[in-house]
Image (tube, rainbow, N blue to C red; front, side):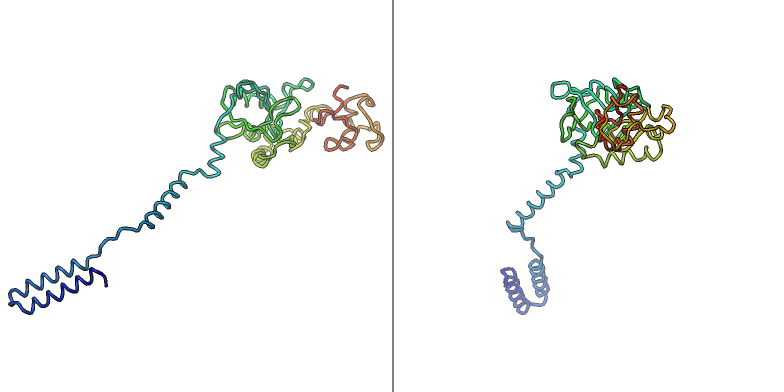
Length: 289
């Protein structure tokens, strides 16, 4: 029996005795006094939490505060993609930039995409090349961007190979969505290839931009755009000068670039090049003829 219960019991006993030995007029007063003491004894008391309970509550509160303050992986990605580390100083063409980064000037080649040519030394300006260049100029010239370099840092020209983020999205995705680029050159970092395929899908399905010319663009290939093949008059029933499965041939064996191209494609190009005619890996052979 607790201390409060014992006190209450003694109070009731003494009060009852007082009621029995007092006159009637006083009994009422005594009864009221006993009842008051009883009610006071029955009032629940608030107990202070133990030290263990206080510690547990503090830990729980601290964990909740940390959870609120800790960003989710998605928030981390968004925060990272919006942080800038370079400024675009010049747009060379649709897929090549010049940036100021870490105190020096760097040329940057956009990863996983290819835009039509506008400044190639041996190729004409191709359809939608100027539009791609102008689009990138409007979006990036003078802007602060985030450069994320791929697994292989540079190409054989010394250019940085990178994803370029502007306001949380890559310029690659913006170009693909407009039909001004295609996915290509899958020999480096493929981290964002799925996202790029998704960005490219609507333009390709709707036949927008580079997808509006039959045979002009191909997904995930490294042989450029088929501008010459799609706009030049094709030779009727071209005859092959040599057996594609025969002895090895080089460009000196052909009298025209078209002959060499027909032979190259019959031998399996651009997916295969057993005669090593495509030195640049762009799907076009013997361009010096």
